[in-house]
Image (cartoon, rainbow, N blue to C red; front, side, top):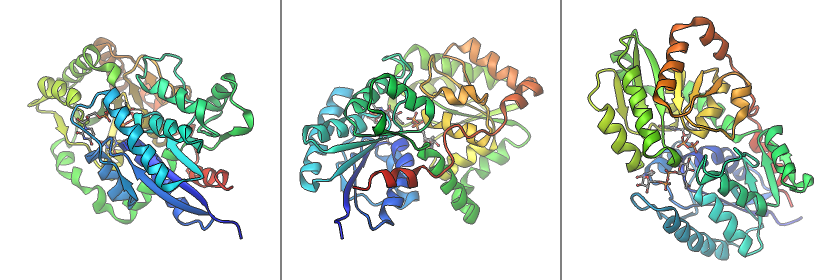
Length: 373
Ligand code: UD1
Ligand code: UDP
């Protein structure tokens, strides 16, 4: 009998935790693997929310978040911390996901030890290294190191081939975010209490259409974020809508949003929601305004129109499917595009159709099979 493959899965932020818990679940139930999990703690509260609901218990927790951390100090702490864990664990594979500092440093530290890297959600490219910043370059760095590229879509696989990645190392697996969304939906169906805490807001805003908002991108800090806040304030002046905005814990986001939006009657600025409650928010919203990557993937699966407040996207599949629209960070444009969806039933219906460009919910099983050996 061959020894189980030693897999070290590394993550540190909310979206990585959401997109990797299906894989950690699949590895844990499979005797072909000895699975270990290391969290960097790049995020703390927002990471812990996901660990709790998914039941993932890390074997290593570097707990390295600092308030308002800079990219260079964060990356330096990540490299030394993750390298030490790899020296202790000596895995056959290091698994990283997406485009964060944790994922990029995890891939680098593995490369320094000649450990094979599997990249989940490989091949997303906007073509602009400052949008999203620094994620576009993080992805390229990981892409140049990885031995296994799990591309969510054919578009992502084609981007890797254009960069001369060995086609034999590229596999279209779908995006594990859909696995996560299906899992959480099943959990809520069997335990509705897991998503019951929005009831008070839902009754306060009864009769109004809900706009769900998230915003956190570093490239939007400053002018972009100010414009997003301005657009939300102007939209909230309409009596027929209400805004529910779980505000990211990054202090740069909170300061702007609190200054611009606190105290408005039909704007609820709330703490980050755990995943079941965020799934509920997606469900009750008429439309989403966001600069998030993950929300751009979840909204099409649920047929929720999503206006993407970014200049470019590395996820063109949602736009091609017609559920997402890129609207940039100009306040007039955001207000006009949202107004069009709110006032024109035909425009709304054209966008509000469920599509599955990002996967069928079986991605984790496909990825696990690729890690054998
Ligand atoms: C990070 C990722 C970004 C990802 C986003 C998802 C990098 C460089 N950025 O951005 O790619 O889209 O996460 O949300 O990897 N904070 C808390 N508690 C938390 C989380 C954050 O207090 O649970 C605060 C801290 O002050 C922290 C700051 O937010 O220093 C920034 O966190 P950081 O992970 O560096 O950047 P994000 O903007 O969250
Ligand atoms: N999300 C959440 N609670 C919130 C906001 C978002 O659970 O209050 C989830 C959302 O469903 C998606 C993920 O977090 O799966 C997106 O994370 P984020 O926007 O922080 O990062 P990005 O996807 O832009 O990297």
